[in-house]
Length: 133
Image (cartoon, rainbow, N blue to C red; front, side, top):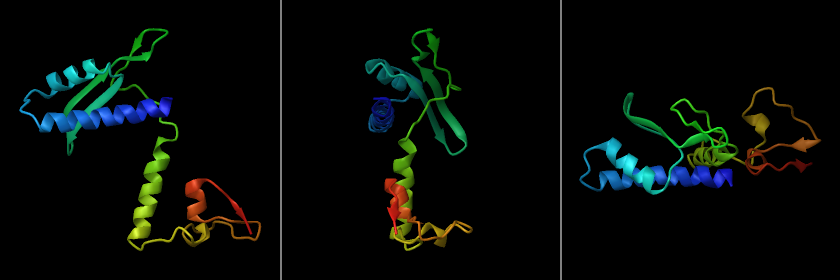
């Protein structure tokens, strides 16, 4: 459920930016506040252009039981969300010919043990399975 909420939050943010830049809204904070209220958004939003922060604000509660509000410094658990991004990045590197997911990990990680007990490939690590040799 937590992962679903985080993905939904990311989609919400993307939708906000799409709607903002496809309309004539000129006040970014007013626009995002309005959209956040519509969906009862709970989290933080940061909009930047390079190193320049254009908008930064926290919404909702970090702890509902204790009624503690989110701040721009609130740390959110991301769980396994980054695994998808890592897998996509690895597959893009393979597509560019920079690595092969079927090669043993020892080819790319210096000092990684090689042996006959397990054959670790990048592919197996992506799907988190181990294959006995």
